[in-house]
Amino acid sequence: MVLTQEKKGMRLGKYELGRTLGEGNFGKVKYAKNLDSGQSFAIKILEKNRILDLNITDQIKREIGTLKLLKHPNVVRLYEQVLASKTKIFMVLEYVNGGELFDRIASKGKLSESEGRKLFHQLIDGVSYCHNNGVFHRDLKLENVLIDAKRNVKITDFGLSALPQHLREDGLLHTTCGSPNYVAPEILSNRGYNGATSDTWSCGVILYVILTGYLPFDDRNMAVLYQKILKGDVQIPKWLSPGAKSLIKRILDPNPHTRITMAEIKEDLWFKQDYTPVDPIEEETEENASDDEASSIHEPLDAEKDPESPSVINAFQLIGMSSCLDLSGFFEKEDVSERKIRFTSNHSRKALLESIENTVLQMGYQVQKKNGKLKVIQVHKGQKSPGILSVTAEVFEISPSLYVVELRKSCGDPTVYRQLCEKLSSDLGVLGSQELLAAEV
Image (cartoon, rainbow, N blue to C red; front, side, top):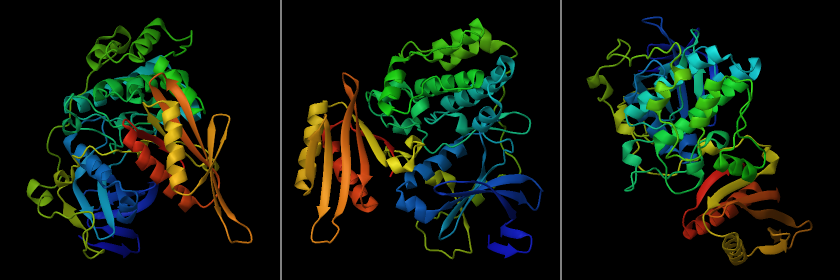
């Protein structure tokens, strides 16, 4: 296949590329039409340099590998052909033209219980199908639920998903990931969690937003937000029906062992109203390449081929099985000027502050203590106007065994600040159960 430029637009083999549907940190998603069949698709174009720079190769492999396992009407479909050039990866995806559920709620507000229940039926069908196939999404939120023109749910963005190979010896997952407002309390506790149970919690948050128009747990102060989630003290509006209230309470149970399961949700009286389960997609559609074609060419992310000659990748070769720390789903939407980075630890506030102080002093920084905070300062001497890096370190107690460390840059070189954060993160990792929660640099 050859990537060419013609009068009507860019061509990628049998696909003609059109308008940009979305743009993110790793690349773009463009509308595409199959010139042979006339069928519409969305082609995700990933920049290899960005993937390598951000060290998310495993995340991309995981998304591709996971999507190849899933064929369900309520899960965005990845078609057989995954193309790659020297500089880009092209994923041929199902085209969903209704946008994000997030945009629908943000623009029009909450849905009626009848309308919201129909969408929730499909969400539960799609998520439970994933679980039955050993896939745990781990980043379910309104932004990752798309709606097509027929008002059908399409679950997307499996970059943080987990497979049975990612379970540790205790049978649990241990990587901290997800999005702050949707994350289950057991994930914050750093003791391991069941992927299906934590996904169920996120589905409960989505149901709450669909029916009320706002989040059940929200606060700009991250420490306060985590405390609310850990307590699971959700305020349910009185105007919701008793059935809806009951189901939300059973899903947003902070105890994962007593939380309602997917199977039990499907037996709930409120949920069962007008419920008709959907079946998985039958194999194989004509748009899929044959197994021989899909496995004929294997190209790694750093291959040195002609950039104008994309080749077909066997998606199953790209499944990342390492239990690495995936962070992108935990990035916060905050003012960039705040330049914060946070992580959790089970060690005491005193031990964390002492460790931070020892580390930065060894690096040649100055430390000032005030009101329980550490101010880390670096002054470049010998200049007419000394260059200053000023970083404040603070520790918040979430629970008696869980703390959040926050580093905030007041001023200074962003590159030097990143180096300091990397050093602190590396050294504090020696303490044990430390996980990076969010970053804004």
